[in-house]
Every structure is written in structure tokens, then in C-alpha cells.
Image (cartoon, rainbow, N blue to C red; front, side):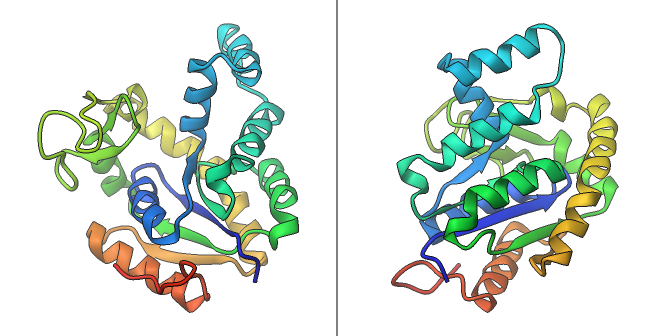
Length: 228
């Protein structure tokens, strides 16, 4: 096995991917990489790719896959991803999945694809209660994973509800998710990489299940066994 670990987390919005990825970062010593984080970084810092993406935003158009792929490729080349990455929100379609295979091929490709399973009504409740730190993007939930105080536990930043986490947008997000993700489920199932995670369980139990799945596939932190 390569000394790099690449995980792709699949599941509906609100299924717990972001929270579980944050918990895995410390255990595996590799960063969580989300497309939302990448886009915000490039836009805020006005990188060449950020300016290119903004040109599409300003015209009300979707950012082409090619631009998203280039952003992810640049992010995977950064120093903190030298041992791999936990990908959350990428790939979103087969073209992106094939591009990711190309990026990781020399390191053995994708190691595992945990699929977080959750009923739609629970998804809706989880999404609408989610809050995000405006500074570091850490994710909280008003019921299941609240911050200890008014601000972010990590950096003290302001917590806010993203526009796409509001009740009126949830159904459309689920529609887009099912439309985009169905082909990816088949793609990774055919490669023997897909494993189911029960997204209805509490955060700690989900992490235990995920850690057990990783250990069963010989994915461990260098020098020490995974533990919750």
C-alpha cells in the first residue's frame, strides 16, 4: 500500500461527512479537503483560479468542471496533503471522479469510499440546525454538536447559517445530490471501494464505525493504531 491515504466521503448534505472528516484529520494526519473551502480560499485570495471562477459567478453560470478539478489538484499538491487527504464534496460527477483517479494514480489511487446513509427527513433536520464558523469553516449543530459558547471553539469566529442550509433550499439540495451522486455510487461500487456508514448514529458511534471500517482495510496512522 502507498504511504498516502485518499478517502472520498459520499452522503447527502447533513449526513455527517464534514464532522467525521474533522475527527479523522487528527487520527490520520491528513487534511479534510472540501470544495467549498477551496472555492472560498481561491475567491478570497484572488488567485488566478479564483478570478476565473468569479468570472463565471458574475455571469450567473456554473463553474466548469475543469476549473474545479484544477483547484482540487492544486490543493492536493500542498505540503499538508503530502500523506493524502479526506475529500468531502469532491468528486461530484463521473468526470471529476475520473480526474481524481488520475491525480492519485501514482500513489495507489483512492483507498476507500465511505457512504453515509441517512433518511431524508433526518437530513432536513440536520441541515437546518447546522452552523459554520465564518473564519475557519468548522461545522457545528445546534442540537447534536453545539459550540461551547457564542463563537467557534477553535478560533472564536462568528457562527452563521449558510444560505444553502435554510429550510427553503434543502429539497433542491437533495434533488441535486441524488442526481449527481447516483452514478458515483455505481462507479465506486464497481471498484470495490464503497462501504456503508450508518449516518443516523450519534457522532461518537459513527466515528467508531468509520474507524473500524478503516482498520479493517489496513488504513492506520503511521506509527500508531487508529483509536477513538
